[in-house]
Length: 423
Image 1 (cartoon, one colour):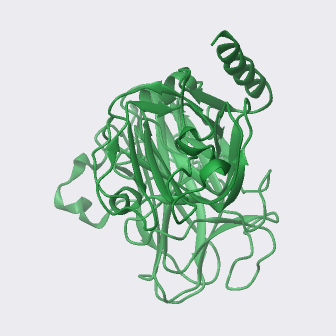
Image 2: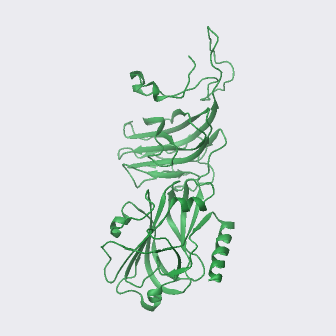
Image 3: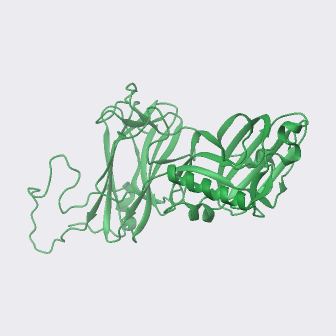
């Protein structure tokens, strides 16, 4: 037991030196899930709580998961078709159900045939799709194994499997087992939950202003893994994400400036999310540039929201109202947000496009922090904009700019409850 505990500690330390990662669970009880093949068809659903993830993660915030692993202590040699799904939930324990109900709404991050287990090392699975995990989400890891028939026998080390290390966590692990056909009944509760290794990158908190994003740094062309930005799809369209773009120039996908931008394909609805540290008593401006390639402004829209959680429900304050985009030159859109208290807020830039145009293009995002400027106290007051201004800047010295929604005239002054405008 001492050898195993020391191994876990050394591996966790080693991985921590060379990659951003976490290990959840320190138990030493051996079991075969989630990499067993004793039965022809095996399933494992394990839940890891937001509290556990937050303890392991420095300055808990949105992260991008790209790899998961488990720690066997025995060798197996069976080749097993394997699928791994990830999903989030707002409950800290699992609710039993069928496997079909478990993977409903989940993201398939790995699908392939894996041969055997290697003992005393984290057996890692690299994702084909980056999974965005938001702060305070509970994570479900769903593993499907399909050896077939009556199971793998000695090649899978029979009922012991890879003797994967696990911890006692009742209420957080369900399993399904069946020979010859896939199981369709509810799962069986297991007291032991596999220890897990997660590799991730953080979505860096914006703390310095002005902040500018033109997608020019450390992106991969045509990748949905956009540097430092998390993505959330839906609610209407759930399969299309924003992509970083360096080479595509057709359908108005050329950047506004530089050589990079981002685009969202038709039948898509995706939100780029980034944490921002904001200070009470200041206000924050957001400016972006976007366009589409069609003529119907109702077919391609963009909006910016903000809130205390990096979820669609949590980003419930409007900065830029949903606005229809036009063809031709990039449109400049801007808005402001006044934080009620100091802390981390999440800004979400959501594109929505139906099947008529091909793409929304996005470029040159600016987020800036501003102090409330001098109030007008002497009259008559004259403004000629001669001092403190720069040509082409969206910041006008001593003035706050905001897009006023159409219903503002109907007495809804509370739309800007904390803002004070020079009169």
